[in-house]
Image (cartoon, rainbow, N blue to C red; front, side, top):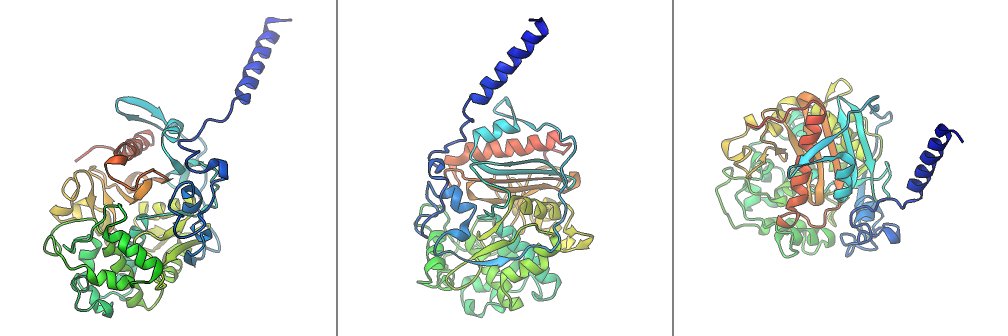
Length: 420
């Protein structure tokens, strides 16, 4: 046998040996329900729990008891072509270098999409997910709510961002939230003490129980928030209740559901590929603070719309000036700038703002849901995930590595990472 033939046989043997190896395990796949086929929750009481998280968070409409309102897709989806020669994505974390695939092996990522100038650089699905899965946004929905507010303002349904909420939501008249302006709600600066610790005993849990059951009514919970930690408009303090007030302002000001507004103003003209949906409360109000669900590529199309400063298909869907007010650190009052609102991020109109010289911002939800956008360089990254904890110190490592990965995406694709 020639040396060349021997070499080919050795290569074939190696290939067969590699093929025979079991597929690499995904992080915590057993706890997340792999052996059960990643099941969807069986009720409102367990959809949030393991082993139901992966299944439920990508098919919430299948959970018994969940009420939804569909947001129909576009008749003709906007194209998302694949880059012909996508560059390798690399990043550094804690002085070590990693690749995109290594990032996926280190964290509980269910979906990852990276776009550059409207082309797909990378698209990955994990834990058995497929491209038609509609991923739960958690608080990324807050940014969608903000976009609808800007579009309602442009159409005159909301007369001014400085109107108090009770001008539109009469049931909030006489309450502190009712007296809070739309702009203060957008910046989460009501000054009212709405607790959000994710321990099951805070105001956000109390509100979600009311939303799920209708007893007490969600509006009564919002009216019960009366303690104040600061004067209105002066300080950012994260409070999901403020987005819920915005959702009710939208519905009252337009006389239409948030799902209808999303479909007509945003989803269809944007060129969405799949139907999306909003989860509803028992009062049939969309859960503005966290109830939007959409496919990975349609989250990417939304990010691309933002990267194009509100334009899609040649039309200006979101008013550009509103979007800059929502996402440009230079347009924020000092207390809301990066490093001031939080030790790292700034906060605009329901968007998180990076401390970079180049305008960069994000939609973010608990457990790792993210859409990162840097408009000037055309870079968008979407991540859906099932981090173990909602937020806080227990997940600091996951979130810190996610930020490092995003900066690596920018470096790899010609983005800008210089800090202010």
